[in-house]
Image (cartoon, rainbow over all chains, first blue to last red; front, side, top):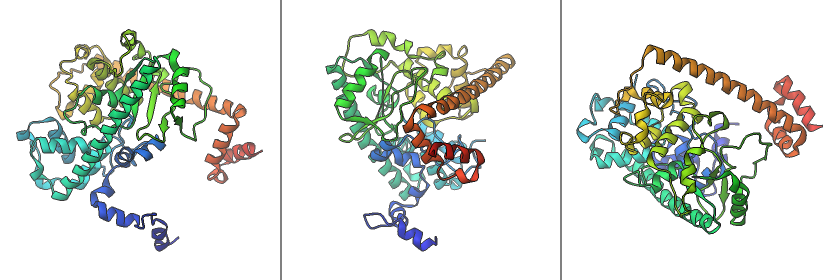
Length: 75
Length: 349
């Protein structure tokens, strides 16, 4: 699947692509750990109980660019 | 080695305004890294609140402040809804004569531990009920449109689970988690709901939260056991911030710090941040016993994992719903692995 098709597939019902959405929200949105968005979007948070962070590495290491996995995010 | 960004996060969260740049060259701060770190620890709202409180927003780019301000405001609005839904839930239980106590983030917000309700990110409404009320609570919640997620499968239970399945209500915003216990069965020898017996004995009131020493203990034990902080020495800024806000120095349990290896471990893990002025000495003998305990725990966790896996395999024979779910899970990968291939063929038959 080429990139163009992939972008087309990501067009939301609102009519904007994921790329546009990130552009609109600012560069920081793309760097924010998934868990933060999962909590802020209650319907998504209701539907899942998966780990919020895309990173398996905890602790916030100095040389690690990925966000740490927070502990149980439910409470 | 603590990264520059984590040093800054710690200084902003826990130190005075004039100490925010202690040991930090502001020119070397990578704000993108700071967003990753703080959001990974669910601390963006607390970061914004403390930047405003300590009047240090001049240290950050405008778009950075704008972004975390938005996150803080969305979180604050969500927490307002959470508190209102917790109160509604409490009234519902009160009417039905069900004793309940709020836990974790919800309890911290209800106890006014934070200066601003927007500071703390909370996933769901946690509360604990008495074992004898389990069926009654299920019925009351079902009658009031709460239901478990569609992919939930009931498994045979040997021990009381920590909590009933997470429940949602299409007319409400926040999911709920009714607890029967505080920790998973294997950790209950160290910390369990017996600590709340006296609170349960009290007369039913609409909103009930545990006292601060209990919230302190629960926060540390949950991090040490459920989130494996004791085994891998992970730290969580959300938990550290909770403890900081609970004013742990005044907490009675802190007197047990040298006796309680888990509380001691929590403070040893974060000693490098120099947040709490608590002397946590670590002797050679305590180090050895500590390591031995960690090894014993690792073995017990391993045994439990094997036990749980076997239990699920046995239940595959009797539970068609579970078989259907397993079939869906392995459908994608079964061609590449011999064992999965066998299981796939067996399940499909």
